[in-house]
Length: 198
Image 1 (cartoon, helix red, strand yellow):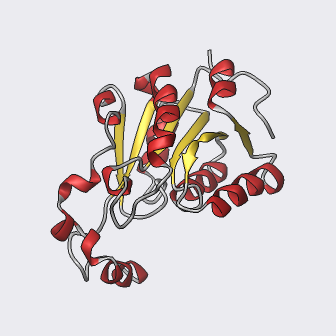
Image 2 (tube, helix red, strand yellow):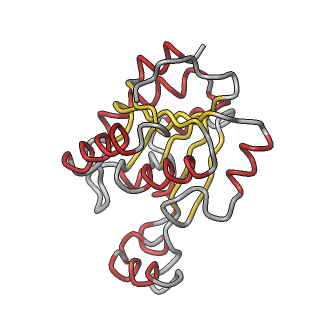
């Protein structure tokens, strides 16, 4: 479903994991991230106080984590904080300049809804609509959208402000939300979203 009605005055923007660790040329580089950044900035500039930047926080050292996350960080030892340094979790410039009034929300897994803190914050603020941008479309953005659906938010996905390392995955995610989840997810360009977000 495309965006066909105004966004409420209780709309928040969730920008997913636009961090230094995903900037080229690192091991987790998302090649589209630099090209997507200007579109993300347009959404943030609408009202920085309504933006929450989620940040994926890797394990402190290889061997940390629970269950399969432990083996994940054995595989990606160079991306643990002990090896890569805390600087990798910082927002990609110039997004960091919007904080505050924008906020950051840290998470140890793909979904920002893990643990319930972000959901409680949005519900206490009576947020009813989420505009979602960031990366990666087929990982953390997907987890963010699915959790938002479960929580009952109106979800608006900014198709030109999300990125992936895979063109095929990006196209499949858009197809999935346009066709399979069309009742729950509206997909539109940043231009369309800003036109409806007054």
